[in-house]
Amino acid sequence: MQILNVLAPVFLMIALGAVLQRSAFVSENFLKEANRVTYWLGLPALLFSQLVDSFHRVGGAGLMLTAMLVATMAVIVAGYLAAWLLRVPGAAAGTFVQGGFRGNLAFVGLPIIFSLPDTPLAWGVSVRTAAILTVAPMMVFYNTAAVFVLLFSQHTVGWAMVKPLLRQLATTPPLLATFAGMGFALADWTLPPVLDKTFTALGEMALPLGLLGVGGSLVTVKFGGNWRAPLAAALLKTLLSPLLGWIVGRALGLGGLEMKVLLILLACPTAIVSYTMALEMKGDEPLASGTIVLSVLTSVVALAVIVGMF
Image (cartoon, rainbow, N blue to C red; front, side, top):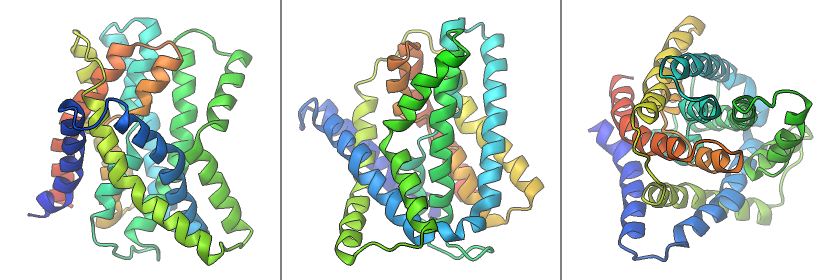
C-alpha cells in the first residue's frame, strides 16, 4: 500500500500529461510552455525559498550529497565502459553517458520524496529539507558534467569547452536560484513576507506542473529504431545508479530514511532536459529520446523496490 500511495500520484500525473498531449485536449505547445514556466519560475522559486530557510543546515545532508556524488561519478565511468562494449559511435557516446547519469531530480524525485512523511533525520534536518539540500548542488554537478561529456564526445576538450560551459551555467534558472538562495542564507537575510508567500506559491506550482510536462514530453520525443543503447543507458540510470548508491551509502553509514531518499533520487528516470541539451550540443537525438522513454518504464520497477524495502 505504501508503494501505491507514494508512487501512484507521481506516475499518474505523468500519465495524465501524456494523455492530455496525445488526445490533443491541450494544444501541442501547451505542456511545453507550461514546462517552460515551471523551469524558469516554479522550480527556481521552490529551490530559492527552501534554501533560504534551510541552507544553514546543509551539513545535515553532507553524507547524502557525498554518497550521491560518488555514485554518480561511478556511473559516468561505467557509462563510458558500457558505450565501448556496445560500440556506441564516438559522437553519440556523450549522449549515452549523459542519459545514464542525469536524473530527473526536480520533477520526479522531489514529488516522490514530498509524498513521504516529512520525518526528522538523524542530523537534525527533515526528509524534505535533506532532499532539497542534496538536489540543489547535484543540479550544478549534472549541468557541468553533461556539458563536459557532450563536448568530450566531439573531441573538443580544452579551452574551447569553457565558453559553452559557462554559457550553459549562466542561462540555467534553477542553478541561478540555487546560488541566490545559498547567498541569501549565508548573508543571514530574510525575505519580506509578501515575497516569501509569492515564492512559496510559485514553488507549490512547480512539482505538479512539471510532472504534466514530463508526460507531455514523453509522447512528443522521437524513439529511434535502435533500442539496445537506449535500454542500456536507462538501466545504468535506474538500476546501476541506485545499486552503487546503496554500496556507497552503506560505507558512509547512512540510516534507513537517509538511504531511502538517496536511492529514490538515484533511481529517477533520465531528465527530459538531457534531450534538449543533446540537440543543442549536436548529440544523438534518437538515443537521447529513447533513453528518456525507457528510463521512465524501468524507474517504476526500481522505485517500487526502493519504496517497499526501506
